[in-house]
Amino acid sequence: MAIISIENLSKSYRVYQKQEGLLAAVRGLWHREYRDVHAVRDVSLSVEQGEFVAFLGPNGAGKTTTLKLLSGVIYPSGGSANVLGYVPWKRENEYRRRFALVMGQKNQLWWDLPAQESFRLHEQIYRIPPEIFRHNLDELADLLAVQKLLGRPVRELSLGERMKMELIAALLHSPEVLFLDEPTIGLDVVAQHNIQRFLKYYQERRKITILLTSHYMKDIAALCKRVVVINDGAIQFDGSLSGIVDQFSSTQILRLQLAEGVSAEGLDRFASVESVELPKVTLRCNRQDVTRMLASILKQYEVADIAVEDPPLEEVIARLYEDHSSGGKYEAKTGEPSK
Amino acid sequence: MMSLASLPTQFSCWWMVFRIALEERLAYRGDFALGTLMRFLPIITQIFLWSAVFESVNGRLAGYTLPDMIAYYLLSMLARAFSSMPGLASTVAKQIRDGEIKKFIIQPIDMIGFLLLGRVAHKIAYYTIATLPFALVFFLCRGYFSSGWPSADVLLAFLLSLVMAFLLGFFVDLCIGLIGFWFLEVSSLLFVYMLLNFFLSGHMFPLDLLGSWQFVVNFLPFKYLAYFPAAIFLGKIESSQLWIELGLEAVWLLGLICLARFLYARGLRRYSGYGG
Image 1: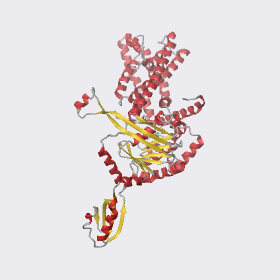
Image 2 (image 1 turned 90 degrees about the vertical axis):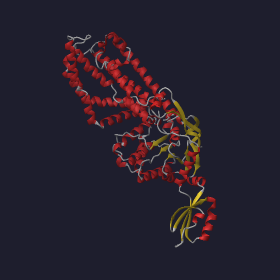
Image 3 (image 1 turned 120 degrees about the vertical axis):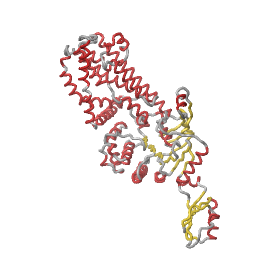
C-alpha cells in the first residue's frame, strides 16, 4: 500500500491585486481587487514506503506548497491526501509524531542555546524513550560528525553545521516520512556533499520515505531514483531522472574529433554546429537522424574519435520549464502569506 | 485530548520547556541584569514629582496623602513586574509573519502553553535579579507605608491578585499578538494598547483620581494589571468587596483565555487557508 497518496490535490489563494501608483493604492483602501493564484493544480501522486522522491521545478512551481499540504501546515482547496493513514491537515498528534519537515531556510533550533538543548526539548515533545533518544542522537551526531559541536550555541555554528543540527532535530524521533525543502540551499559544495551522503546512507538504512525539493541537480542525481517535475502547480513528469531526457529532449549531441589537418568546413550541412575547437567539433541533431547523419559524416570526413551523448540534464529541464511557462501564464506562489 | 495517564509525560515536557526558556534567558545575563536594574531609576523622579504635586494641593488628593501616593506607586510597580509582558505581542505577531508559527503546527506541542511557560521562566529569571533591589527600595521607603503590614487575608488576596495580574497580562498581550493573523503589523495597535494601559491600569496614577470616570474604568480588566493589587495592599478595597472583586478578575481571566484560544484557532484556520 502506498504510504503517501495524493489525489487531485489543489491549492489556490486569493491574493490582493495591487495596482501601481499612489492613487491606485488609495483607491485600494476601499475597493480591492482579488486574483486567484493556483499554487497546486490537480496533483495526483502515490509514493511507496522507502522511496526517495525528488520534486523538481522552478521557483514558485508549487513544490513547497505541496510539502506544506502534506505536513498539514495548510489546507487544500480541493482533493485529498493521505500520509501514513492520516489526513495531514487534521493535525493529529499521532501523525505529528511520525513525520518531520525540514526547511532549508527556516530555523527550528533555539538560537542562543546549544543544539543539545533543543534536542532534549524534542525528546520531550515527541516523547522519545530516553534510551532511544541517546542511541539516535549518538548515531546521527556520529554520521554527521558534529559530536563536538553539540554543546556550542547554535548562533555560533556555520550554516552547514546548523543544517546538520536541523536534520538531527528532525530525525531524533525516527520519523517514517521526511519532507525536505531545499536542505542544501546556500551550502558550499563540501557541505552539500556531506548532507547528500548522510541522507543517502540514512534513508537506505532506515528505509524511510523521503520527499525532497531541491534546485541542485546534483542533490537529485545523487539521491533520488524517482523524480517528479512540477511546473505551474501541476505534475509534468514522473519517472526516473534519465527518463526526463528520453522524454523531453528530441536532440542528441555529437562530439567529433577530426583527424589531423581536416577542416570542419561544411559540417553545418548535416547538423547545427554547437562549437568548433579544432580538432574537436560539437554538433547537435535530432534523435532520429543520428545514425543517418553519422554515416554521411564518416563518409566525407576523416574522424579520429566520435561520441554521441544526451544533452545535459540541466539544459533539458530548463527547456522543460520554459516550454510550460510560455504555454499558459499562471503565477504560482509558495512563499509566506502575502497580505 | 490529554488523558490522565499521560499527565506525567506531559508534565516532564512542560518542565523541559520551562527549563530551556530559563536557560535561554540566562544566556544574556549581563544585558538582562542591567535592563532590570535600570527600571528602578524612575522611582526617584516619581517621588520628586508627587512631592511637588502634593505641595500644590495642600497634602491631599482623592483620599491619598503623599506617603500613600508613593506607597501606591511602589506597589503598582510591583504589580507591573508581574503583569507587564515586554515583547510578547510583537514576538507572536512576528512569528506569524515569518512563518515560524509553522513549528507549532508541525510539532506536537501547544503554542499557548509553550509561550506561557516561556513567560513564567522569563519572569522567574527577572525576579531572581530584581528581588534584592525591590526589597531594598521597599526597605528604604518603609516610612511611606504609614498603616504598616496588612492583615493575613488581605496579604493572601494581594498575592492572589499578583498571580492573576501575571496571567491577565499574559493573555491580553497574547490576544493582541494573535491579531497578527489578520493584520501583518500589530505595532501601532500595540502602541495604542500601551497608551491606554498606562492610564487605565493605574500605572500612571491611582484610578481614584479619575473621579466619576472611575466608574467606567472599573468595568474594564486593565485595573487588575496595576491598580488592583496596590489598592488591596493599601486597604482601599472593602473587605466585603475583596473576594467579589477577585472573583470578577477570575471571570475576566477565564474570558481572556477563551478569547486567546478562539483567536488562535481561528487564526490558524485563516493561516492554513491563506498561505502558510
